[in-house]
Amino acid sequence: MIIDLRSDTVTKPTPGMLDAMMSAEVGDDVYKEDPTVNALEERLANMFGKPKALFFPTGTMANQTALKLHTNPGDQVICDSNAHIYHYEGGGASFNSGISCKLLDGHRGMFTAEQVIEAINPPDFYHSPLTALVEVENTANRGGGSCWDFEELKRIRTICNDHSLGYHLDGARIWNALVAKPETARDYGQIFDTVSVCLSKGLGCPIGSVLIGDEDIMQNAMRVRKILGGGMRQVGYVAAAGLYALDHHLLRLKEDHQKAKDIEQMLSGLDSVKTVEPVETNIVIFELLDKKNDGKFINLLADKGIRLSSMGSGKLRIVTHMDYSDAMHDKFLTILKSM
Ligand SMILES: *Cc1c(COP(=O)(O)O)cnc(C)c1O
Image 1 (cartoon, rainbow, N blue to C red):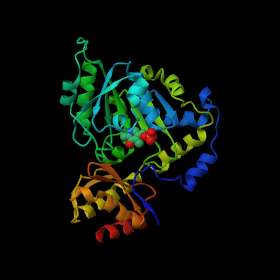
Image 2 (cartoon, helix red, strand yellow; image 1 turned 90 degrees about the vertical axis):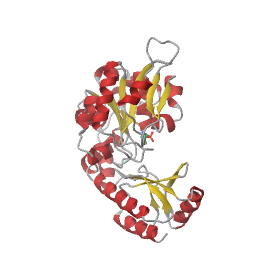
Image 3 (spheres, rainbow, N blue to C red; image 1 turned 120 degrees about the vertical axis):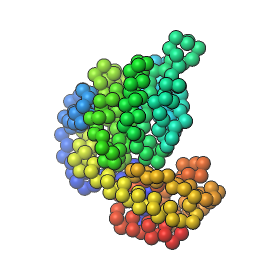
């Protein structure tokens, strides 16, 4: 039995999801004639209380499109130094949009409204890049699945209004925040101009992300998606998985969160573990007492069929997900206990 805890992207479609996919009604989505894609876009737009939503093959492409829609070449986006758009999108911010990132030194992937104010370049000072956008990530991936305080997000909204800045949410794991915190999708839709969500993480779809936003900002989204190579044809087969997941896999995220909590507790009791970051959702980040032992620790677990990942700087990451069963959980906890 391989227990893969490297990421929540390793899940495979369930039989029910495959059935939904195989029986999907499809059409050419480049002509906007795929009824299943249209239904998924409409459903997510409604869920977030926004007029527009557009289906993408990946979260990276959805985020990159958002960056392009909000900025002009030379502009700057304010984001956390741990942001996915900065670390894990291949330098796309500069490649696709010709923009730079103003990195904030936040706490667990999250920053404050005061930090945003300080990071905004005065628009009439033409020596510095023009600040155009603030981007936040919820939950914050490299922050350890941490959830933003909604009041802070609202304060940042006010600042964006005051300075005419766009406000984008990378909500690849917004689903986890939605089940862990009281705020609804609509609450997020109300304060952000654009929101990207991933269907291929906690929700267990094989492919798919959606960018949701206001009418004006989304006007060019189809064009940008086409330029990036993301215009797809009978993609309703994939969108059907998304519709299925929203019906069947959203509330069960609570189980992933509970398992992550159990792992946190077990790790905290191990002599070889120095710190475990507080678990809020489905990600556990921890550090060994001796950073040099990272590779050894990973290999030791790999020998027992357990996979986890290193984040560098001595940090290890475990992510719970739909395909991490109760039996796997019991086995993993037993193995950890014996270490
Ligand atoms: C996974 C992820 C994305 C999108 O990644 P893709 O692999 O391109 O779908 C975006 N933002 C965050 C925070 C992520 O974790």
